[in-house]
Length: 460
Image 1 (cartoon, rainbow, N blue to C red):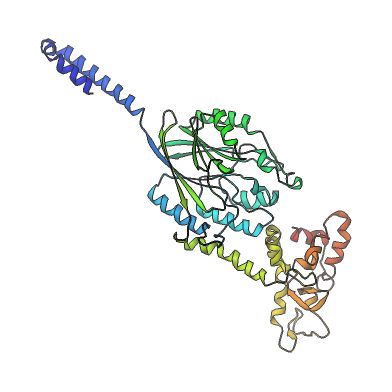
Image 2: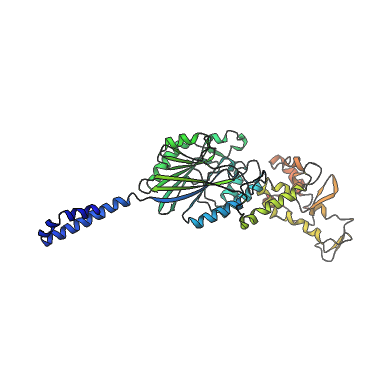
């Protein structure tokens, strides 16, 4: 505009001798040039976007309590997330995977999934540890929680289709998000746990998806669950990706923010001890990041724990305290279904809804002299010295009849401790299964018993 004004000032004498029509034409020409120059300036507009990033939570609900200054915990994470969302309403919240714990700690992982529901992530990349608990747990618990989980190169045997990418609009920017995991992170995975999924080569998959996203977005971010050093290969192969958020691997140089070519690479720590806040200045028309700043937010003890998140995770620790009081080393002592709950969440939750779980309620109304009124046959009084209700309304220890647990608990059918898996549910075991059921499902108390019908009700 200044250039146009100087031009008009320089030729003011010429303007005086121009007729009215010519001056009007010149006015519209100048106005057009002004709009054109303005649009060129606007095309270089820079938009700020903030990304809060987590990875490698490894199932940690609270800090480990170890060392002089323990860090981490999802209640502290919730405090930071809520605070930053109020400060930056357009903030993007991403997770790079390994949110769940290794080994079959299904109860712990179920609580982690509930906690992640409260955090409201924009995109969660699948890590290798999410596969550790098996296909059914993955499908019913993780996918069933409706979390924004995705991965472009994971293929599941049950044909469930995962989201390969997502588009989020933040501060007028259309941001393309892609998740991948490389086969190398599964190097120490047992073969028995690989049967329900396949990991494709991510490079050709990324080429196709990036090409599609470039037509729909201003900028592309990649969440990559990878082995150490693979971030360089990805940044070199796909310079059109503005930022790579790394999960699983740790930075070889120690720096959590690096630049490889045109691509910014971001790492996070371990066990959910920290969060990374990335501030990016982006040109919308080109998707180029012109400036990047990184802040590592340590979840130290001086950060208050969000009360609502504490209430959400506390029941897990209450159950663990109960289990810790049980003698788990003695194979001749009943442990109870709660101990099974740690590793068999889906089975426990199914059992909990059956009549087996509440069968022990009848025992709670026993009188002090060991008898009870109303057995189900009107007005009948039962003498427990002759009829033992506990044989079918409780789980009795065959080694010590004085020890029993209310209800038909896991050990009633699966036996105690290390022997619990010996009774399978294959065809050749059908007679054994029927024999177990018929210990209690007898006339006159269960005259309508049909093995196939009843089995469908409790199958787990």
